[in-house]
Length: 222
Image 1 (cartoon, rainbow, N blue to C red):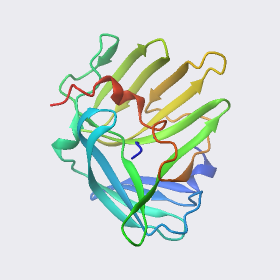
Image 2: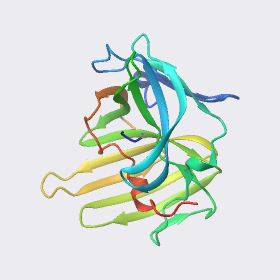
Image 3: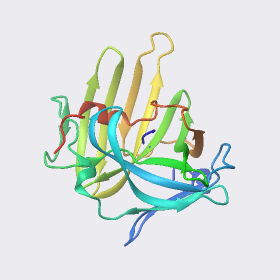
Image 4: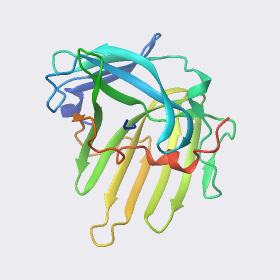
């Protein structure tokens, strides 16, 4: 399973998100990849998270894959079992300590036989940075700001979330000399990026698209 982040006129032409009274609509078009065997798309969300690869997944929306795309309606009201507390670190300031968020939505492809065969990602490039979008649910308006650094990565978090569904952008640059990952996790739309929907068969890119924000708080659920 893989986790998981309208920028320009070109992007709007291939993808649209909108909120209505029923929920949050993801309208993905012009999916890139070998999609011939895809019949349906499931949106899943992790719960009972105890480690990066130890969790359960609940299906929250299903859609038919047709015309090289899909349209998913994410629920307006989200079950509490999918929600976890934001990162708890001295270097990360959370405006409301009672706030909860979901993991990034997992978008999975299934064939006619009901077998999972791959995953979808919304991503793009900005110079030497990779930009990936996650869909995150928040149970209230709040902000998260700060930094979390170690010997292998330097992560800045600057997010202002609204109650309901949010698009969270992971902007990642890997230093080719030392392999250190520099990342910005933000809800602010990056500029000069054309995002597109990509399909990858099962087993490809197993972990690099997981939203980095959740590795800090896997054991701080309630």
